[in-house]
Length: 216
Image (cartoon, rainbow, N blue to C red):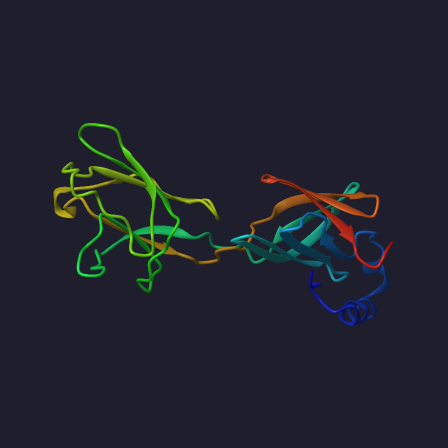
């Protein structure tokens, strides 16, 4: 696990700020106490700022901002506040000589695999699957026309309201994921309590346990 900043850099920062800012017992560098396929760290600096990172499979998170003491806990607020990713309807694209029923792309047109979707029709059960880089196309033997489509990006939890398809859509849809600050966690006063050897960060997605590096 790589530390967020070299130990020498942390020591230099501690010297560079007023002594009063060094009084908090939370100031220091922490490593995520999970694994083996999850890595992360939290740096609580003595200038009132923090840095956070997490790598867990395909999920990468990061954040930086301000911290403050509330009672016996330290609370984190991401600053500046991140702009969440968004889903937008885009112009249809030809992929390998045909326009897929559903195509999810980045703004540059590159296809995104692994996006879950549900397609509804006038009759019969909806179709559920996930996209490939080249999108997803209705089976040749299924002549139903899609009337609505819902998409869900599972790694970062990006969703949008149901897309209702009109006659002009011809039963096809392209969705663009606009990343904005994708992967930046919006901590809004998420608080951590001190534990033996580290701290536990409480957030909506669940608790995260960190161990302090370099001892108390």
